[in-house]
Each structure stands twice: as structure tokens, then as C-alpha cells.
Image (cartoon, rainbow, N blue to C red; front, top):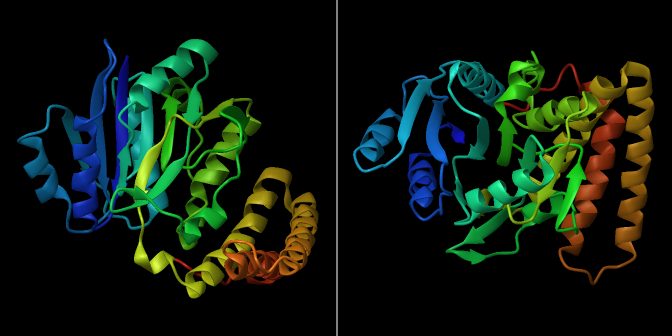
Length: 301
């Protein structure tokens, strides 16, 4: 089996280097062949130097592509274009600041042999100095309690996809979501799910991400929550259509408002103030999204 590991990167060479080196510790099953595709989303090919340096001591083949058109959606769509031309059975999206678990490939092999699924995803565990660290990003993560379960979408920080799915579909990441700098993966996989493709989540398909200091403030929570609220409306309209999508949007807005009220009643819970702000700003974002969606520009080049 041949797996192509796809990593989109933008000016994070130190993280990218650690990500690639983490594959040295991974256990590779018999008859697995691993190759890498790096999509460098800088104008001047910022990551080329570090890739050339890694190649000298790396045991896996690395393909390097410089996508000069800025924005994560352009980078991910360039990935899909290249994957279609590559010789591989599966390909994976990983973040450039992650490190894979040593049994990532072993567990993936067990899952596809047992469940015969074509899309597999798992958690991204946040770490600081190699210790699992509680942080504000946990507020935004999907709450999945089961060891394995089928979900409606996956994040591109940790997902493995059969190449056959991409070859049989003209689906691309939505270029309009460049303005958000996020959410393109949620919509992409929701659309695949709508087409009938199963997505299996398993807690053993895990990667680790170091904590980013700028994601530990109240301002970051407010900005991200408000942006997610507006983004949610866009995704709902894409999935359900404009009219039903707006109805679903306002129902969810009310639900988030109710969640903020319920949260306010329990002030002694962990991350209380951050959870309260998250629900409130998600609700506000959805309420205002029909009026702001076309005007707003979150993404900065």
C-alpha cells in the first residue's frame, strides 16, 4: 500500500522540520510505502531550503511544490491536483506543526482491514514541551467519547483518504473560504459525507500539536468564536440551500445563546469564562452572519 503524506506549510520551517522527523519514530507496517508532498504557500519558496536539508538525511521521498497563490484553500486544492497525478492508494492531510503518533500507520492498517472505510480521521492532541497540556483550543474541538464512530466531517489536521474518492469526484475546497482562513475542510468533508462516503473517527489515529501562545487569550477566543458563527451560516447554506440554511442558522444561534445561559449558571466549571464567551460570540456571529458574510474579510495575506 502506498500512502502520500500531504503537508501544506507557510513560514513555519522549524515546525515542519520536527513534523517530518517525527516519522522516523513511526512504526511502518510491512508492504507500506510512504512518500511526502509538501505544498509551500509562500511567494518566495520559503520552505525549499529546509526541505533540501531534510532530504539529505530523510529515508522517504519528498515532493516539493511551491503554490504562490496565497491562502490555505489554494494550497489544499493544489494538493488535490497533484495527488490525482501521483501513484498512491491513500493520501493524508496533516498540519505542518504536528507530530504523528508512533503507531499511526499500524492503527490505520488495522482500521481499514476491519472496517473497509475510505476516510479515516482522529484527534489532534495539544502538547507543550511534550506534556499533554490543557488549553483553550479544546473548547472548539468535537466532543467524541467513543473509541470509534462515524462522523460527518473531518479536519485536515489529521485525516487519511482513499485516492479513488478524489478521482471519482470533481470536488474541491471552496475558494470563498479563503476569507476565513478556516472551515474549508469542514465543508469539503460534509460534501463528501453528503455524497455517501463514510468517515470513521478513531481515537488511536492521533497526532500531537504543540501549543501556540497566541491561542491562549480571551481575544483569540472571541475572534475565533465570532468567525466560526459567521462561517457556520455559510456552510449551512452550502449544505441545505439558502432558505433552509438560514433557518438552520438561526436555530443554531438560539441553541448557542441557550448554551451560554446554561454555562452562566455553573461558574465553577473548568474554563468557565472562555466557554461562556465562546457560546455567546458563536451566537452573535450566526445572528449577524446574513448581513456580514459578503462584506467581511478575516484573512490577511
